Length: 593
Image 1 (cartoon, rainbow, N blue to C red):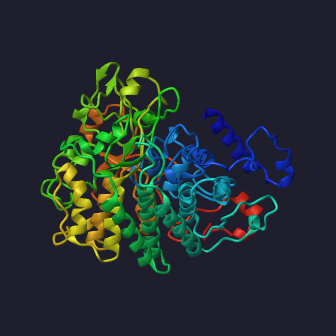
Image 2: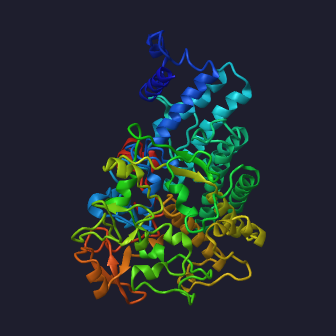
Image 3: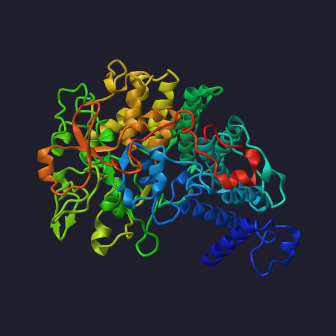
């Protein structure tokens, strides 16, 4: 099997780098895999698709499963840096996130990571789709591998459309002399019709269970339904708020797909009854096999494939913003602007009092060092530790709100070095499907209390929060100018809280046409003389919050990312790279760039 895998990689590399003309094929060694000798059995189709998975998991070129260009990390933990959810240590973090988050990005000479890239992957997918039917296998067998490839193609184009709008649509193998290499962009709505056809085929033809025991294995029917609901929800809300034809059809498709997942799948919300720990417990497990909520995940093995989750948590990046922390409801189900239970933020311990238990399972409470085995110099440490602090302190962050959601210390303790974590990446989980269904139904004006009870209220039950009631939706004064109903405000809040650090916030703000929220400064802890004494030596500057008039840590003050901007006329889409336009002027640049 190892030799087959290596040879398939060689085959795919050849497909990328050559035009596969007859002369080349005639010269290819007869004792090796080639286009003429391949595509015979189910094993051939499986091996070919295995390498499509390999490319998906190891490249920012095809980010729809949220891989990372280095293959070492997983971007599902990093993508929130594009948004107002998290803040980074600017001197030690890749600027690709921060320039976008601050609105300081521009049309680069070459493609930006996670952007206008990955066309060689599309070529490999199209080659597979054109050749699967050659195999001596039952049509149902052929179709399930074709469905994998079509799911990949649909997700590839959905991602490109979400970032660039119109894009050239290609559904066949191209060679160096193909006219399509110089084609103009295909209108967005035409591309998305093709995307929907690919997703529908995948949902119909993929098996409900590959027999892999979710250890993890291949994308199944339920994964396809979740991904279809995600794509359709994005497209439906984009058309509703940005303009476009028939947004309700896309919202209905999102609702249909997510409801099919809810009703028919074997997955359920993970809960042991431990309301104070269940929300983040499985995000920190090293083996997610059999976890009821997880539909698809990435496995890491020490010494073979590891990640830098601990580097994310320690020093490098991992902290949340004041904006994010303030969105958690109080235990009475009311926002902090309305609840008499809110204790304020004079010190960090107050922030956690009487709040949604997910807050303490997402952000580190100073008293939780023992529970999470947070050690520094062999002693249990009490955070937070802010950049610049002196003395015997632990890993530092810039906002004071230290992310704990994915923290798993076992491998870090054993190996005492970065980039050795085997914390899995939860790529697809049922909770997103529940939220997609609730939002799609609400956008259609069709949401019922029954819908809430099988979706958002299931998530609230896990942590013991009050149910959302249609006849008692709070009106948070912070969001009265968003242009949507209080119901949608609360559904969007629930999504932000539940899916934090899972790569959704930036795309959500874009599809909702709420990009102006990215102009909110990335602030942290409340700051006064008591805080200055408690966090002696902290080097993060402070600013006065224009809303409350109080002083807080201001993460990006004094850097090139200070004073974020969002230009409504251009920033909802990304610019095409300059070298791409020079090679094909027919593509044209996006407005404002």
